Image 1 (cartoon, rainbow, N blue to C red):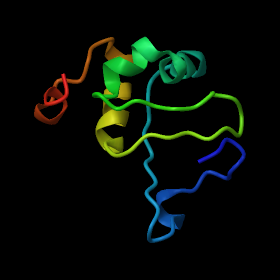
Image 2: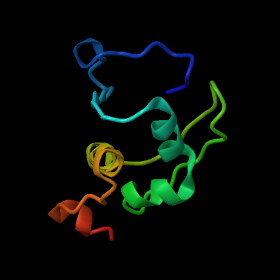
Image 3: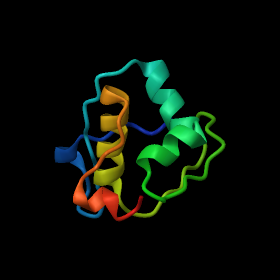
Length: 92
C-alpha cells in the first residue's frame, strides 16, 4: 500500500485483500523509528527484510508473517522486549 491510498477497514476489504488493524501504545515518532530503523525492525521482523525508500507514496515490499510481525512490533514498542511465542522463536 502506498501512503496516498485510502486506508481500508477489515469489513471493507476485497476478498483477495488482507487488512490488519492493530493498536499500539506508543508515540507516532517512536512507531516511525521502529518502521524505518533497520536495527529495530530486525527485532520484530523475524528474518523478513523490508525494501522501501520510506518516502510518502513509495513502494514497500515484504512477503508473509504480517500477524506475527505486527505482534512483534507491538510487543517491542510497548514493553521493549522481543516477542517470544513458539512461532516467533523459530526465526530467532
